[in-house]
View 1: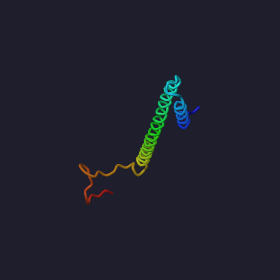
View 2: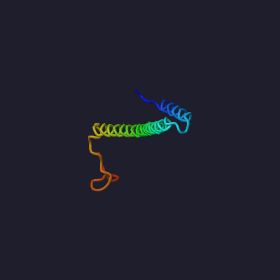
View 3: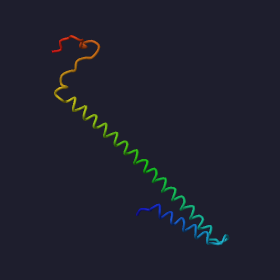
View 4: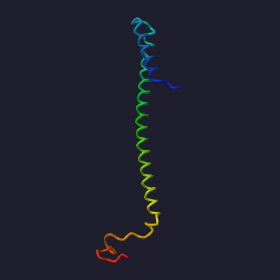
Length: 106
């Protein structure tokens, strides 16, 4: 059974109305005050958890998107590496064995 924030707020308002209707020296006023404090704590816990959950979901979505992009990039690199064209070594572009203008590469 899920506890909705709206239910907690409604109960909080009701508890404050009951407390305000009690005379200042009434023994039940202290009891209701303690319950209001507990309801406030519950409300804070719920709203912080909701906010935290939302942040975590956003972070998770970003991580999933990043992982998806990484997989796509790796798959493309693997497909290129496994293609027949890439089977032949690429000519060196610098250093020893680098192709020079005018070299016969054929």
